[in-house]
Image (tube, rainbow over all chains, first blue to last red; front, side, top):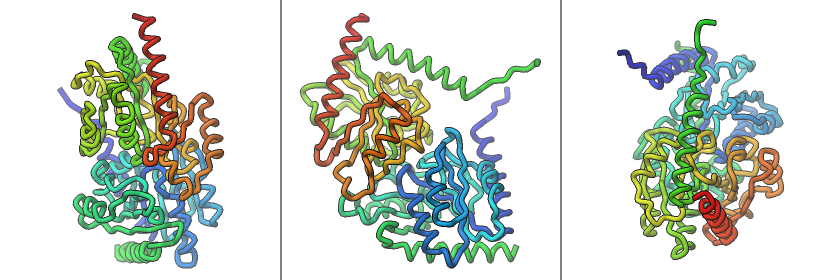
Length: 224
Length: 227
């Protein structure tokens, strides 16, 4: 009797697609950042702020993934950035094939930095490599400091963590030190950026890091 | 055509629907009012359950099934209140289905229990697709998440009987428009009731408790007619 492990074969073939997409983007000099978080953590607001702040320094494009609706893509487009909306029609995550389809509908010839705003979900997107050069996740203060305990994979798969809505810290019982400890226990090399997209607090450090990573990525493409 | 096309997803949900219907029937005959509580991560499911258990102590016996990908912090919080609780680990899975729920229930002692809550995995997408056999589906949306969520996660808003808007004590801090929310909800679901509450300040908690009392009463009346 033959046993076929469906889940494994799905993720294995996705891993191959992701690897290929990543190398193609490296050759093109486009850093794709896969931005993941729970619903309402502030992905679109953070992106809006980054686009506005880095407008003169980088050409930024955004791939908005949603189950339906296109409110986010409209917000990004209003800022003058190239934006495309993909609808997953009920699916809870983006995979490498879906990401490729979305990117192929965009003109990336002058793009330095592209963001994939993944579906708002702390579980499923963590399981799928989208082909991005970096995985960045957002945790918002109102969600609570215990989230690393409950959704560990997302924290393990991310190279950077943006702790958003820092301006709301006085209104919530959120223990910053405990949160940091829990995150670093799961992922000792993760970069943590506490920010408020509303007040601008912490945005400078995050944006400096993004500029640095984009330059590094372009350098690695030239060497290859 | 000499081959069969198997719609695997439809097949999975059809099997699940059958198991859910059986479970709902079984809970009806045991007289346990079973609620599937769903929300995003960090919307305040556990805090609401804790306040509810405290407020209804002496009136109803409440049991809780905590479903999480990992950890048992929620079960510990509920257990500290003296309520019967079991922790289910989904092993990475993003939702509960009827079979997993039935297994959780069979591991619990429900004698004398009036209300059983399933605290589903924190996720606005996948849990909406799976009927777990509950009598009612209740969802939470917290103010910090924003008023546009019905547009982005429509199914959750379509399948739920009641929407609890939580953390209303933080309304002054966030740009959250109640009218916009209600418009967005109504575009997906005409019938859903909407209540606003803060488990922290206690605001709106009475309306939620009254909703529960009414639902338990109606559930018992319906069960009485059937038996």
